[in-house]
Structure formats: C-alpha cells, structure tokens
Length: 98
Image 1: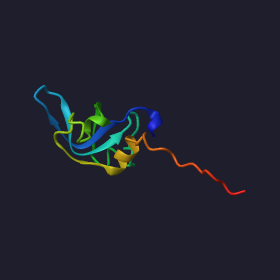
Image 2: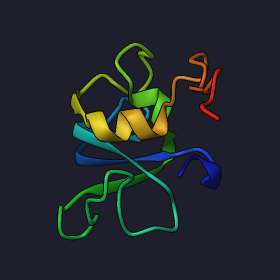
Image 3: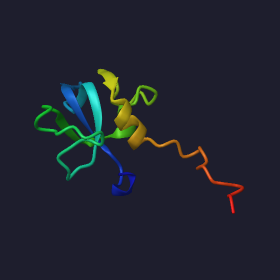
Image 4: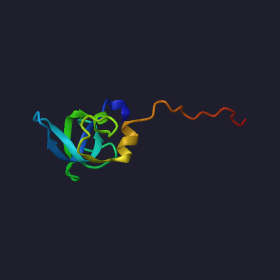
C-alpha cells in the first residue's frame, strides 16, 4: 500500500494542544485517506477510530517526538507496512538450479 502515498493517522483517542490543534492519543494506526480501513485491515467505523488527515504517520512514531506525546501504542502491523526499512536489500537468488 505504499504506492498510494503518505499514510495519515487513525487513533482510538484525541487531545487538543495549546494551539487548538487536534492530535491523536491512545492506540494509533496508519491510514490512507480515501479508504475506510487502516493499513492493517481494521474498519474505521467499527473500531471507532478517529481520523487525523493533518497528521503524517511519521509524526506519531515515538522517536519523532512530533505528535507522539499521548500515543500509548503504535500498531506493529501498520508500523511495518507504512514504514518499510528501505536500507534493507531485497533477497535475490545468486546461484539458481539448472
């Protein structure tokens, strides 16, 4: 799903910072705007997840320090799918059988 563009955030809770901006809280999932489910397959409405179009997925990761102040848990499936490790080389067969 990385071909769709940058992922936004869907979260189980929200909070408002001092500037009045809505930010995610609780458990966060990666979500592509225009779809009705998270990257890991949860339905947004059935899971009661709130959408944050204005928050990029990279901003809720704990190491970013951006909008991650009240994030309790980052979905590991969404994290793996939305933040691929680009430095890792893909597997290739070097000596195929005849």
